Length: 173
Image (cartoon, rainbow, N blue to C red; front, side):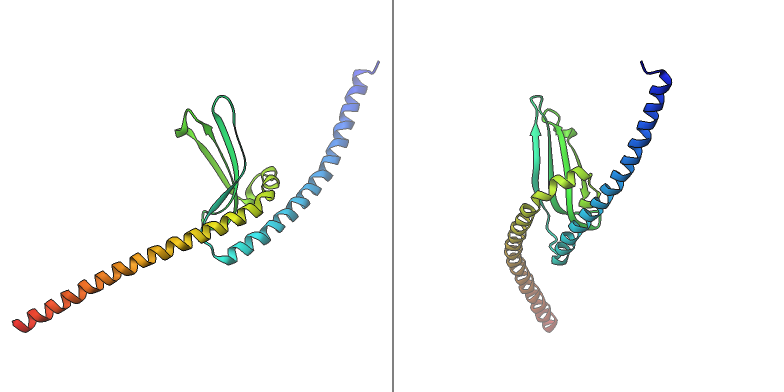
């Protein structure tokens, strides 16, 4: 039967060995994570060059339990603070208490690693969503531009009438 002293030594040695292995695994993880972030930053930079200024979100996963508690995770392209970029958001709540719904969002590189790994598969869907949002926004802008030109024409005509009335009044004086 092992003595208490030999069990303690064994546990101590195990911790020492495990921590050394963990140190190596952590270095490898951080290197892989940095490479992953760099690859996504290439996508982010390419999107930034387009100067889209439109947001879009795509569902990654969602769920609801029998008690009405729900959650969903999405990848998107949005402005967070002063920066446009690929982002991840996590929303959750209870259907019985919608006023207590919660949302947390991060720029992609700031999101938890497991969420980033999960989200990458949805980047093609995000690009499709952004294309649709850009096309829809373009159509709305064109329609509103026509309306603004109509308003501007009406305003210009009113200004011309005011100017003519003012000149006629000056001549009659």
